[in-house]
Image (cartoon, rainbow, N blue to C red; front, side):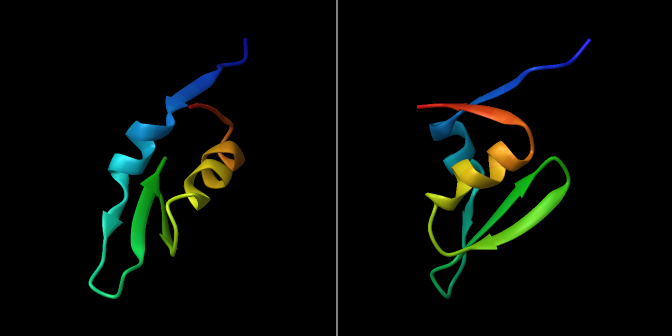
Length: 54
């Protein structure tokens, strides 16, 4: 049976930690990403198999 993963966009954005240089550190499923804009989070979550709910 396949597991369907969903996440609220607001919850995912709350996981992003703002850095001093204006970028963000975003961690999901044990992977870490340095991103410039929180809008990148949707693409990353979808890559991990999540359906993002807005």
